[in-house]
Length: 94
Image (cartoon, rainbow, N blue to C red; front, side, top):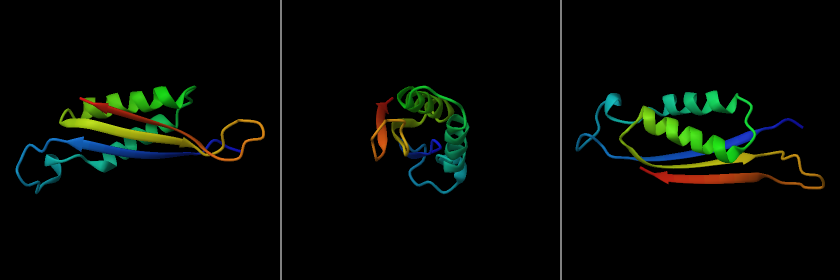
């Protein structure tokens, strides 16, 4: 079985304006997807450190992000006689 992952990402941010009306006033989820995808295509030993690196990079890209919650689920963990998923959740406030 191959290693397949599910990534759930949530960001909390402070808006620079009272009402967001333009893309440059908010968080671009396409850029977030591309950032996560770039990390997920790399070989990583620990999904815990992967979640931490992704969180830090998101905050560097978007300093207005004040809270990040990320869960990474490994669908087919290499555990003998185990059927199911394993996951790690990481949350950080800036």
